[in-house]
Amino acid sequence: MLDIKFIRQNPDKVKEGCQKKHVKVDISLLLKVDKKRREIIQAIEDIRAQKNEASRKISQTKKKQEKQKIILRMRELDKKQDRMEGILKDANKKFNRLMLQIPNLPIDGVPVGKDESDNVVIKKAGELTKFNFKPKDHLSIGEKLDLIDTKRAARVSGARFGFLKNEAALLEVALINFGLESLLKEGFIPIIPPVMIKPEMMEGMGYVERGREEMYFIEKDNLFLIGTSEQIMGPMHANEIFEEKDLPKRYVGFSSCFRREAGSYGKDTKGIFRVHQFDKLEMFIFCHPEKSSQEHKLLLSIEEKLMKALKIPYQVVQICTGDLGDPAASKYDIEAWIPSQGRYRETHSCSNCTDFQARRLNIRYRDKDGKLNFIHTLNGTAIATGRTIMAILENYQQKDGRVLVPGILQKHLRFKKIGK
Image (cartoon, rainbow, N blue to C red; front, side, top):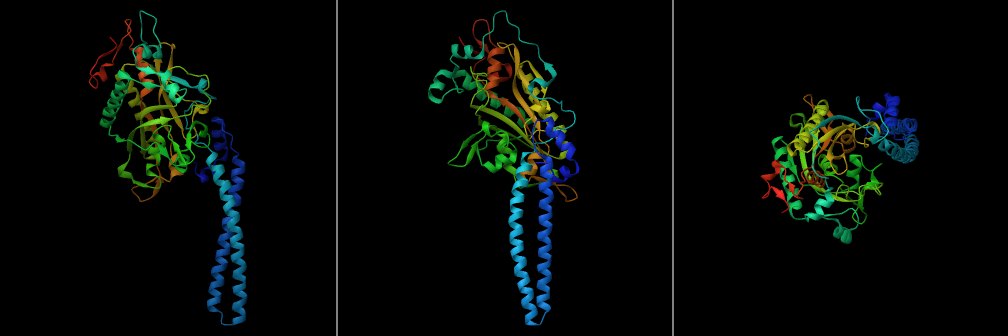
């Protein structure tokens, strides 16, 4: 959520930011509703002042007839106040509804664009894997080595599910251990969170207004299934106050994640790249507003460090304004090289959400002068296990059909190769 004072003072800048994100919000209507709302609040305060004055006069007036007139006047003021408070309640609902529709504004330096085709590749790392044979796709490899079973998963759960089996299951555990080991060295606090979240907390994170179709909702229990652990790590500190000396607070959460993949009909239907359920290690940071740009760089550097350790070729992409989600003010993706497709595919992302989520969740910090300010929040993928396994199978496949295990993972496993 943006600061209403900022919107009042910078309506054109807010309109421009919404346009860059290709989000339609009537800022002029919001300001009209805000003006009317403030007028009603002022009118209610005037009524309260009149009632206070009337109470003072009652205590001072000795004539019974005069007191009765003042009492009747107070009753009229009570009715008027009740009526005005009803109008204010409706105005607040309309105001809040419009405020929640406004996305976070892109920060300076984010490339302007309409969709993912306008994202900008800013870096490539690692030499593309070379083969002296035609490389197979991850599903063919997984099925031959009895690592991935999407056919049985489809029978029992439907499309876009898969069983990870044998060495693939152990590879996932090794990836999580590798990621946690790396992040604990960086001072991250490990978390295994709930995978269900209250609607008001999900709304506080800024994903409901234009992302609800992606979410699984359990109507009977009034709970969402999380699509990533960042969605539940943010609300951990809702309505809390950090001390400035305790910042930054860095968490790493491991959870299963659930996504409907709405709008992806016909895309990536084979294998485990785009599935309804997957496991992920996610980073989340609460920090001082002046440090969020620095923390964003830290998240990206950690993601790159992990990819380099796995020795998977990748590229870094700066996300354009039109491809940013509502909460993000800036975002980077890391895309791994997938030989069978001859292109890079997303495995990581990291976003700076500035104070957008903190305002909605009322998360603040107390500075050295005792003043309360809204905190900044950031999130980033550490390990998306399914997609990383996909990249490993494809980049480490051998001519004889076996798959090598990345050296960095071998200490977490009892084998160096998959297959006989």
